[in-house]
Image (spheres, rainbow, N blue to C red):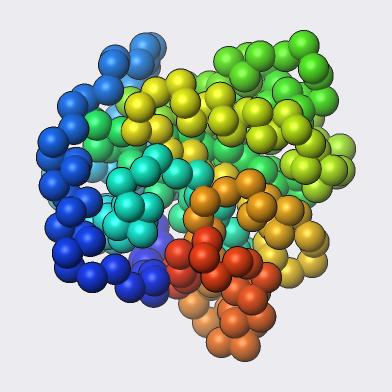
Length: 253
């Protein structure tokens, strides 16, 4: 497992306290059908944090990120883009586990969407066979329903939309009206639903900037010892300051 250090945009204690108060007043969402539930060993195999007994360093790190995002989000359900500065910085790991941390809260649900057309990985890591296709298939088929490409993950209240049959033209798909329709449909299906887009690296392709136009918040992931301060600052400059939530340093143990 990786160790995380969050350098999120500052939220004062009042904001964080209010976020906890709002969560405490919430109620568990309507039960979502779950045919199987992952064991702790299966979660570890999938590089997922496990909200159970034992060491909780990574769990607490992601819970802290969740709290800070909720404070920045000011009580609204939101769509978050998680992108690495460069490939190999751990963006998919952070996105997957941030979505899981939100799903651990019984008052919330989360959808993890693999938006990396160049190196899709979430379905492989999660051991999910996308037999109904995925995001690209939905975006390219006007007759497809969003429910066609949503898969159970084995974690209650967490769903996955895999990348699907990618052909390398992700940016054009992401700027289509169907992409916005999908995000709106998913967000409004349940109260307190949060969407997490696993995007490609900022360096090397415009897709991260295209996706940023569709979301409420952007989280940048930097590899500790991999991405320099200058490259992090350069990557952050690609995003609207009003959407930019901050930087997560992903550090190998």
